Every structure is written in structure tokens, then in C-alpha cells.
Length: 396
Ligand SMILES: Cc1cc2nc3c(=O)[nH]c(=O)nc-3n(C[C@H](O)[C@H](O)[C@H](O)COP(=O)(O)OP(=O)(O)OC[C@H]3O[C@@H](n4cnc5c(N)ncnc54)[C@H](O)[C@@H]3O)c2cc1C
Image (cartoon, rainbow, N blue to C red; front, side, top):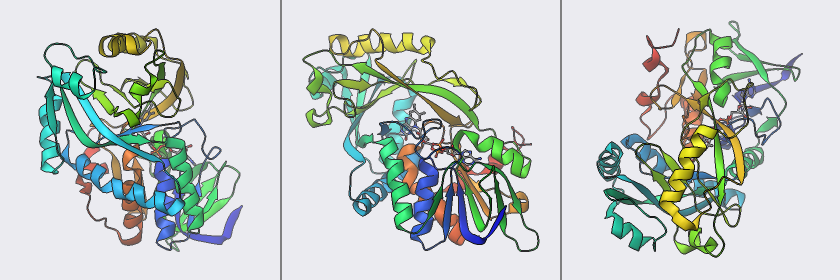
């Protein structure tokens, strides 16, 4: 069934945080927008669901520091437009052995972007955070502003609401099975599994862990975007210490570097619980997941919690586990580019966010909208995110 009555300016495929932010931005520019989602809106089978995501500006690659700074006012603008909050600010603390490579590169990147950095020894960390973090001998802490927690599912819902308010059409349970170029009209034709066929002038693919599969079908090339099954773990703060882990009491978002990259957020979404995951997982296919906690990783996390939070947090085991997926690229950089081939500059792909994209969603949405509207985007150096960087190393 081809739905010719609906010729859109833009069809966005995938209603995670990136697709929802993109649909909001295209609709806001007056483009007639359709957002298609294969499952129910706000489902838990991709990457954008859940109660929280960390914001931090401490990146080793300076272009991400700049993107975090540019994202911040866009989060505030969206909050102001919708009328509620999704972003809760606090400082960010990075800890680890002083000789860990992360520190020098991250400090340089922050300074290049005029982000104030404070380097603390282990005693100063203990003093600054009233004994809540216990660092081993030889570890340091680096405090930066622009940390915080985003309420994840609420943020996706916010962008979808704003999309609708700006005139976008949203359709769920509409899985896209193929995309073709009409050689006569130049339109993009988007085929779904039972929800119709749609036409548009431009298209944006924000399919998260399904990106590789959809692009293989549409363009016949394989982008090295590997889905990774991982999980967010919530741990119980021991009785009597709950207030110490809240934003109100000055508790930061944090990352721990060295043997394992452990990170976490203050206690916010579940009173008395603190989220502490580990930045690892297992390669998977989106439809073949275990949905389970990963025992190998839990052992390392237990040890980390025992060491860093002593008797303040119960390290016996997490009380809540939320399964989730990353979409990894070989270099950990995003893919934000035109799809090329027969689609040339009519289809934009925004994927491969490699476990650190959420905080940038409003900026990614703005960039994707600018690419479809005018072919260029302001303020972001897209050379790091090109499809062509994979040539000879996986794209075939
Ligand atoms: C445990 C965990 C912790 C994280 N922590 C952080 C953090 O602290 N800070 C941070 O910045 N980032 C973090 N991230 C990463 C961040 O959540 C992701 O980068 C971001 O959510 C990616 O969003 P997305 O829209 O690209 O993908 P998704 O949310 O997966 O959205 C893609 C959507 O496309 C739909 N779709 C796919 N194929 C089709 C199709 N053919 N037709 C129609 N629809 C389709 C899917 O169903 C899905 O809804 C974390 C991720 C995880 C899993």
C-alpha cells in the first residue's frame, strides 16, 4: 500500500533519542516530518530507555567537549519549550591512577575548550566529597563542571512531544524494511512491514543498533557498527547514608579510569539507590540478547564498590538491572554523514554512538536537521564522523 497522499519533506527512521530529537528539529524548521518506529514508542529494546544517563564534558577528544558545551543550551531550550525538566546538573568527578593516560588527554581537551579543571590528590578528593570517595594511594581526582543526569525515557518523550507540537507525524509499530530512491521523481521511498509505504524528499536513519542491518539492505554496504549488550546496575546505599549520594548534597556524576571504566550517577531516580555500571558488554545481535546481568563484569564492579565506597554502599549485588545496547564503531566515534551511493545527500545516517551519545542528542538532532535542510551543519566538525573513514576497514 503506497501512501501517496503523504509526501513528507523528511522521514526519520527510529524513535530513540536521536530520531526523536531529529524529528523535533526538522519539524521546528517547518519541514513536514514523519517519525517511524518499529516497536512501541518508548520501548525498552534499544539504547535510549531507562531512568538516567550521565552528562560529562571530560572527554579525551576535544571535539566531544565542544559538543557537550553546545548541547547544554539546547537541552535547556527544549525543557523551556515543553515546560518540564529532564536535565539535573552537578559537577563531574574522574578518578584513577595518576599515570592513567586518560587524565592528561582529557585535561588538555577540556582546557582547549575553556572548561575549568581542578586536579585533586586523594586527600583533597576525600575532603571535597566529605569522605564519600576513598581513593587508593597514587590515585587522583579531576573535577569539571557540566556534569549531570538526564532522565532518559522522559527526555525521549519530551522530544516526541515537541515534535508533535511542531507538526511532526509520529507512527509506531512501523518497522522499515527497505528504502529506495525513485529515479524518476528523486523521492525517497520508505517501505514498512505492514504500515504502508511513504515518500519523502529526504530521510534520516537513526536506527541505533539496527543501523548496520538497515543500511546493508538499503545500500548494500556494511558499516562496522556493532551492537553490544550491556546493563545499568543499581546498588543499595547502606541505611543512614542515603542523603550523601544525592545531587543536593553535592554528590557528582563520576567516571573511574584504569583497569575498568566504571561510571555512575547520584541517587536520583530511585531514592536510596545509586547507579554504577561498567563500560563493557558482549557483542550481540539486537534480536538475540540474554537480557541478563553479566556475572564476569559484576565481580569487578563489586570489588570497585567495596574499594571506593567502603561501608556506604552495599556491594553484595545490584538490586535492579536494566539491559541495554550500545552501537559500537571501531574508533568509538559517531557516524553522522550522508549515506551516499544512489541516495547521495538525500539520506543522512546518525548512528554508532558507541555508548556515549545521549548527552549530545539535541545537538545531533540539530545537525541532522541542518544536513537535510541545507546540506551543511554549523559548529560541529563532521570530518570525525564520516562513513568514508571505514573504507578499507570493514565497509564493503
Ligand atoms: C547502559 C547504557 C548506559 C549509557 N550511558 C550513557 C551515558 O551515561 N551518557 C551518554 O551520553 N550516553 C550513554 N549511553 C548511550 C546512549 O544511551 C546512546 O548513545 C543513545 O541512546 C543512542 O540512541 P539512538 O537513538 O541512536 O538509538 P536507540 O535508542 O536504539 O534508537 C534507535 C531506534 O530505532 C528503531 N529502529 C531500528 N530499526 C528500525 C527500523 N528498521 N524501522 C523503524 N524503527 C527502527 C529502534 O527500535 C529504536 O527505537 C548509554 C547506553 C547504555 C545502553
